[in-house]
Image (cartoon, rainbow, N blue to C red; front, side, top):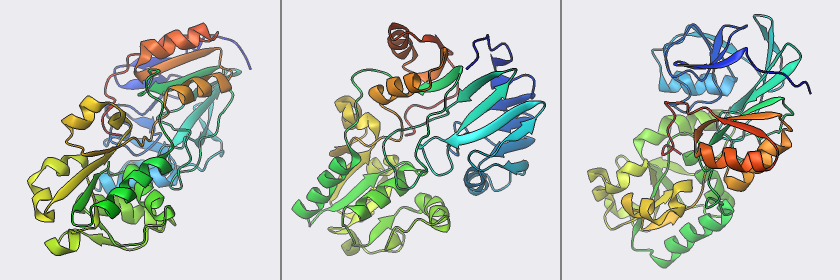
Length: 335
């Protein structure tokens, strides 16, 4: 790969900007042209004039922003798109349905903007594919050595054991609406749980979108309208805030669980009211971040958000130049 300064890729108030193509990657403000890595709200915002993304990300944005009507350009993984003399293509990021890394080739050099990503297997997302790069742009949500995520199947076993141990209690699992909800449904079914699962209304639309893209979650029922007796010994999924909200009272005696990478931090688990914290993350942990950056063989790594300084220090020690970008507008807790 070539070695050269990336003066055509810069950080602006709107976000990361590719000057020769005159577009932004995951801009935090409305712009004329954008490439969107995935459908989470801190990366996919409404109001852009034209958007390049995977078809799945476009579908997610249409559900989340039904009144938004940008010029939509869909690209399959690996399919090149020429914009302003710059060659773009998308590679799987393993984060959520349709999530992508943005590969940018210009002037004999290649930059890869990874968005959010994970390296653990996920039955509801195309697996991450490392791409060789001159410049690699990475997140660092869990960029500290203390964050080493266990296998998700082990955490799911804890949930199923609790359902068996406390059949008189309603189990309420807090999950983020896009990605985590559907991944947990798939993992729970893969572990052999075949009873009905109830969903909070806020989770239904995106779960139906996943179903439309070929993901089967078995017997899923809306929580609205179900009797209190139906929730006894059953599993209900809801946004994490619902565990401490008045909404949860209708379930009866609740055992609250939350699935998040942050559940490995006891103080956060207590703060969120998680009686059963499950350490399941849709982001790369410390080891995966380091491994991924080194696999790209990039001469330089830019770190967009999270625990930037710790990751930059570790990469420098491993022989990679690293630069914290201190990019504003990204949420750490939404995973």
